[in-house]
Amino acid sequence: MSVELVSILVLCGVFLLATMSSIHMGALAIAAAFVFGMFVLPGDSGAKVDQIVGGFPGGLFFVLAGVTYLFAIAKNNGTVDWMVHAAMRSVRGRVGLMPWVMFFVAAALAGVGAATPAAVAMIAPIGIAFALRHRISPVLVGLMIVNGASAGGFSPIGIFGSITNNVIERNGLESSPATLFLVVMAFNVLVAGVLVFVFGRGVPSTEQVATTPEASALPPDDAAAPVLDVNRALTVGGLLALAIGALFFGLDVGLSAFVLAVFLSAVHPAGAKGAVDQIAWSTVLLVCGIVTYVSLMESLGTIDYLGNVVAGISVVLVGALAICYIAGVVSAFASTTGILGALIPLAVPFLERQEISAIGLVAALAISASIVDSSPFSTSGSLVVANAPPELRDLMYRRLLQWGFSMVALAPLAAWLVLVVPGWL
Image 1 (tube, rainbow, N blue to C red):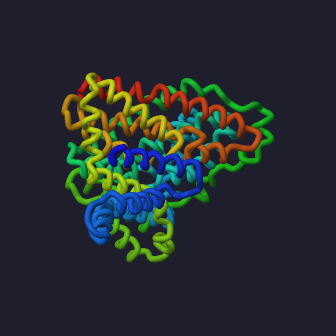
Image 2: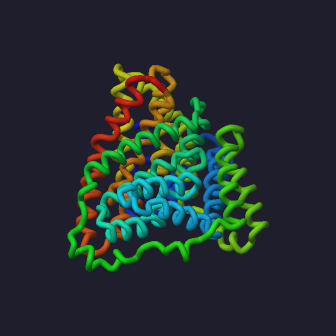
Image 3: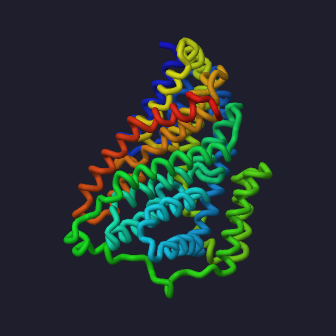
């Protein structure tokens, strides 16, 4: 068996073992890179270690750590609470708009740097309680929150977007952060419309609403709502500046986020207390670990090996569809961030044939990998189930299972048909 094929099997083993056990996937990937690399790389031990360590994505580390650091400060100083309350006030008298508000609030939080599960964890308790009190389907609200967070995460300063754009650039592909974000967001808005149609009438019974303690756990009223003080205004301005700098001036997202975080820490030290501890270190380790192992695969010639395999596929569009389905199926059980870090490099030889749009296939991969986060086996989906009242938890689990696996079956095909086949991107 060739070393290239073994490296692919090891990567599959990393995903499988991490999914079926409590071992952190990023730590496992780094360990696999070291052990496997020491056996197969040429040179002495020092040269092997240098090559393995050289694959560590320093730029991506700065992006993930910097953005989540800045978001932690925004959470500490009350900016996130202010954003949520402002959104809640916007639905006074228009309860039917509540699912859409939850979608866009979750998207906004993920879009400014919150890890997708973190955005879901913050919004799900509020959204589900509101849904039960006002007889809106809690399944609908939960799914809207997950979809919104997944869509917002692909903003140029979101974690999903940062990972995807960084991997694209590292592999010499054409990058368009704004296009990726807008395409993924538009697709998720359409899916959200389907959600409203499918689940809009699925309300719990009167008895369930009346006896559910969470139904009374509404957000605070206007008297207790946070106000936009100077520190929060500076934070909102900083988040906007970060997005504008990345989109229009090409500023490095990670380093810019650190500059803004340091500035806000200096202006309001109390608001930054403990923010470093809230950096998404688990996500940073996960993504950087996977990318480190994929870099080892590149140095071993695995990417070229896959390129030769892809070259044997006579119908390019069929190969693209297969990659999208791989993304959807694996991500329904494994980490979306890990999948994004691994699949895009593996698709590079396919994209280098230039017979299909690179940004089109990357966007389709992004959608296929992220839209299945509504599965109850994913972190975001499980958070929604956990925040449902006990008497509705089984129902929530079944509905998320049905919807999540319908997305596994349909979303890759839909994304492929819309974004890859026409070649309009």
